[in-house]
Image (cartoon, rainbow, N blue to C red; front, side, top):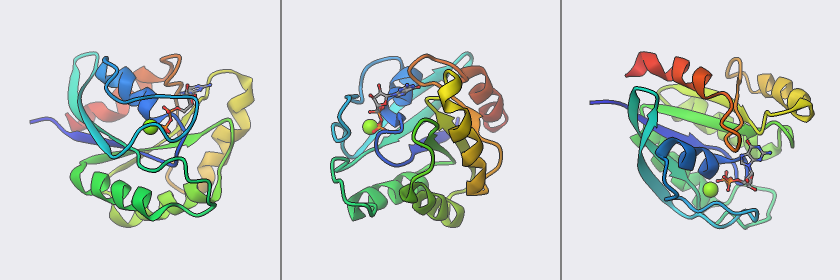
Length: 163
Ligand code: GDP
Ligand code: MG
């Protein structure tokens, strides 16, 4: 038996892009507009020789309200409870938003293991956002670019001990 990894974080940080990269088939929908994917999606993930189950969280991502929609919170909690490890994604380009801190609290209270990742970390524009992620108090953020496939070796290294 391998482990289950839940990809969590607020809308539009790149969760589904990473899910698609890990699963290798376009199961989760990705779109430029937040709001396309819904519910929980499970796939068989692979990085090199590492095999595991990955869960993508979504749900009413088009709500523009400042506070985290209750449905998104419920879905995240469900994903967290079924996962051995949570990969918490923040967006290195926008920097931290209030919802990121809400997710950090949920994960701190509920998750068995949390790995923090700053996505969209390709290029210099992301530097400030990567450093801001330390403020969440969840350790050093992995630098990822789900879209460009950067940081996958580092992700492998942190996940390998769980296999
Ligand atoms: P989700 O709402 O968290 O599932 O985010 P999506 O995977 O749907 O991605 C939201 C947007 O961010 C899309 O326009 C993606 O193409 C873009 N995106 C995802 N990963 C990256 C990345 O590594 N770098 C950049 N620049 N954009 C990304
Ligand atoms: Mg999505």
